[in-house]
Image (tube, rainbow, N blue to C red):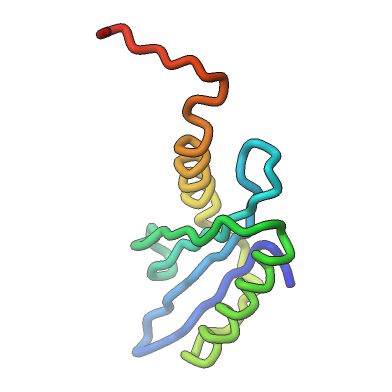
Length: 113
């Protein structure tokens, strides 16, 4: 299974889109996360979510495969469309990594104290 997927579903003339991406977390800890962006095709995503962390890419791929199976039962289909929300997913990953690596050297700069 690919580490970057796009699923779409057409309902009442509208196309709903979900983009999924598996990415490593910062710090070379072997932890990975699943990132999701969802919304109407041709618009900005209305939801961005993350799941994890997971121990290694294969665990994350297994979880993604289960999610894709569930989504296909709800009418979504894998699409060959290029990812259009990759910058949104990258921003979410940066936010997650910022929380994990905020103080990697043990030094915190706080000019107010």
